Image (cartoon, rainbow over all chains, first blue to last red):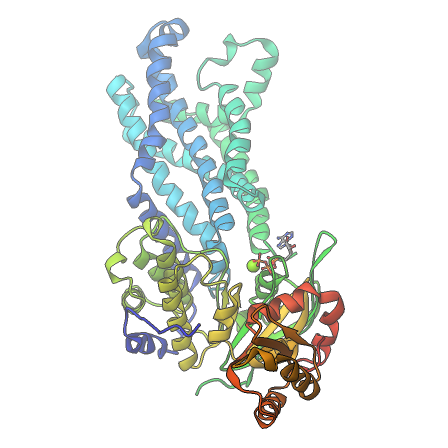
Length: 278
Length: 331
Ligand SMILES: Nc1ncnc2c1ncn2[C@@H]1O[C@H](COP(=O)(O)OP(=O)(O)OP(=O)(O)O)[C@@H](O)[C@H]1O
Ligand SMILES: [Mg+2]
């Protein structure tokens, strides 16, 4: 078949674009990370509905638990809210950290990861940029959930305490997200990441002191709740928000997060860098 | 201009094993710079796997390969500085717009934001996507995605471009657009390794073709050489007088030295031929002996026939064809 070349665009333009042969100097790690961060923000802008997914759960929990069980658990809904809002904030960011793994896995399985791998930038920038994007999403979700809590009657001690609590929660979520990042590197489908991580996260979140006071639980459960890292973040955040922080809880949270990062971050970066090599 | 080494790809004995199966099994490939090299083979032959090894995405389990003289394993960075890959499966970000995808690649190559935007805009225009520049890629048609994907591969014009089935699933119009891009690339001195299932595509674009099956090279040559190596060109003759057919059959059989087929049309004969020069003799002989020709046609075998002959009877003809490249006497 001798096909006539029917081009929409004049080849001249194509020739001009192709005649550029100079390559820029390869980007530094910071520039590459910020570019990936820009990508995350653009995606977020194109799909603002993400935001609804993010805050709708905490909202439902907040309303249902406060008005259904709040009175029974704490005597009054107002009292319950004071303890519950910091807890639900922790739950919000911890659940969001799963998204880091699913979106990374989406990149890898859909093929854009291959494109990235042939480009001359510092490869972990992809992970760093995604994590920066997460920080923004965490901040937005925490702020919205906090505003909801305030509207319902949550009264923290002061702004600085709330901000420090936010930082602590985000640091913890950042640490947890490295586990899901590692999972995102090895899983064959994004659904695998979300299903597996939900199966782990739901029990952890529910078997914590977010919803009910520890001493109201049966003995064996109480033992578990007490060692659950999510309980430690929650207790520390409550303390920070109400001006009666316990240094022990904060230290424990920082230590747990640090240990998580020390183990899973290098693992995730290593597995990411070696993806497909074997 | 600008291409230092005259050999773009040099691979020898490449092997890739996936869980015991040899996806690529001792593959040799040499591609000179500045050409379009067709890389053909049936599904599962190992084309994509080979391309992934050559483009540094997959580590070979055996053998060596260099791209412009750089080893694909030990000098992966140097290789990546010269190549681009448009994979079999589209590798753009569906959740970004067309122009954002190109800005992303330009930034990751090291362009400033300003240069990245300028480069993205001119590429979008050159690829006829200006109208869709600010639409999300997930709303693009298959042809538009393909073009954007190729555009993303030439944000920095590569010296070697791997195109893995760039026209799979495209309509004839979109396919022509991709062909134009390939021709423009070669005119601009980019070497192209082109994988395709469409043989007319390789025929149209490729200077040389390598046919592989089960991870091995089974034939190599120019499209013309491959066709003649299979020797399935056909001579079709129609006589003015059906009564002369026995004589024509005798004469043709003598000169061509191949079996002559008598068609159901009582005035027609045909023969599979390997040497066009003998055809001229045969026709001259017919006229000299007073056999009157109605018309005759010399049919070139299509690459499809070549492909089928090579891969369909691989056991009989395969290895020999690989040995003597474009040898003339494959049964
Ligand atoms: N990651 C992988 N893991 C296991 N097997 C694989 C993997 N990639 C490819 N294969 C196998 O290797 C063989 C060659 O596959 P490849 O994709 O290279 O073929 P191909 O020639 O590109 O085929 P197609 O024309 O269908 O694209 C196939 O049998 C395939 O199943
Ligand atoms: Mg393939």
